Length: 489
Ligand code: HEC
Ligand code: HEC
Image (cartoon, rainbow, N blue to C red; front, top):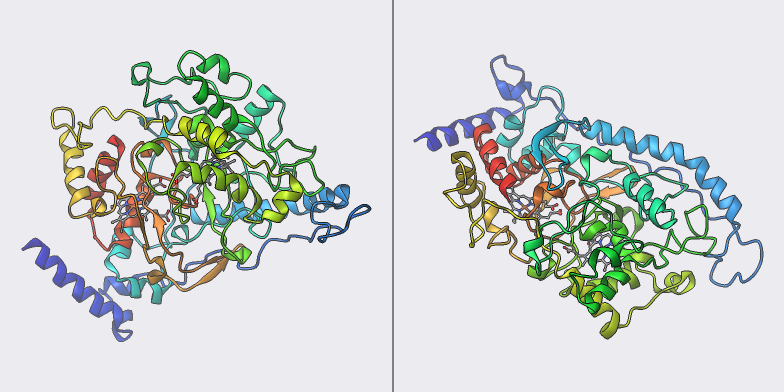
């Protein structure tokens, strides 16, 4: 009965909202909805001067790794302020970036951030928005800009960017500098995962967190792991910590580190086998304005997954390990890789060892979940249990985030383009994005930001996002219940 009344009133609201005639009449709540389009930020790209020509030597191939480095560095530094100011303004316009720590903690104590951070136009509520059909949202230009593709701080340039916590500690321990002279990482530290994160091994659950509160680097891994890994896994870990040349970090003139760089290590991004939120552009989309920003995924729980990469759908950890090195590190360009110092990994003796270590990285414990991955009614409270019911029922999450590991191991196209007109936002084209990997939701509270590009900052944002995208029209109370359940994962 309740449902029926609701459906009728929605139809009524729609009828009122869709006609332009009624819109100015008093008492018509939908008529007071703000009119879009929502401001999505600057459409022109940030400045990005071409590389200066080579001064000497082999000009073959356009001099793309052999340029006048002092001029390159000065030019890029001159553009840095403009690029960062534009990006930070864009973030501020989209999100509430404030530090609103809740009581809930990640394994090693960093507070989980609270609240919906994506901004709505003044006067619009999430309930108003979710009452509209995708067509109405698009026609009125009301899709929140925080739900759209997030650009790289300098989309035309791209490349790896590391958060300051990682840069400082890697420098302190190993002397390697991951700072770029042309750009900084753009999200504040309180909105990214804890540093350093805990490490759980599938092979030694008895030990709990084996990180000892340290960032694992070439400096300490042997000491930390010699008694709990076999020699093959230790060698895999060594390789995951060894820097290899990369597009922005290498020994050539075409780099973005002040000094020639040995490169980056896998675990510079996937720190302690988890993630620090480091970002770059995906290698395999062209043109540059269509390349997705990507948020580093956690390597926890790789052992139970079957597709890797948000869109690549590579079918083994071994394949992905090779792919990162051969393609992702060099923007999908094998020629550049050869020029800047490709380090091909040997499948049998190196890739396998690296994969073996990655595949024993476990999710953090979820003490309220039973052997089937569902809440143990003895341990969960009423709100969490209601949230679980919603997850597998009205909210529809379980249709894709299924099984004990909360993923169906495949990709889905959320068809976000139903809700908005294509636009270019600080250099990135926001339009149809195609199928994406259904990321697992285990350990979710420890891996903000969310979605492949990190466009959603909190779990509350993801609830509003899916409520709109799936048109499930949850009540505020239902959203709170769902959140309580997501926190238990
Ligand atoms: C710039 C930081 C960075 C570095 C360095 C890096 N990765 Fe990644 N890694 C990512 C990002 C970002 C993704 C997500 C890719 C996507 O969305 O398609 C990813 C995805 C993965 C995945 C798939 C995870 C999943 O759940 O789908 C694996 C496995 C992986 N990386 C292993 C490695 C290995 C091995 C190395 C070293 C050779 C490495 N990574 C180096 C950022 C990095
Ligand atoms: C139609 C399949 C589908 C349904 C239904 C679905 N999801 Fe997802 N989910 C996905 C896909 C695909 C992604 C990756 C999207 C992307 O990265 O752009 C995702 C990503 C997420 C993420 C981000 C994970 C991360 O690590 O970044 C969260 C959180 C999430 N979903 C929660 C939910 C919740 C809560 C519901 C129910 C309200 C839900 N999903 C319903 C397919 C689905």
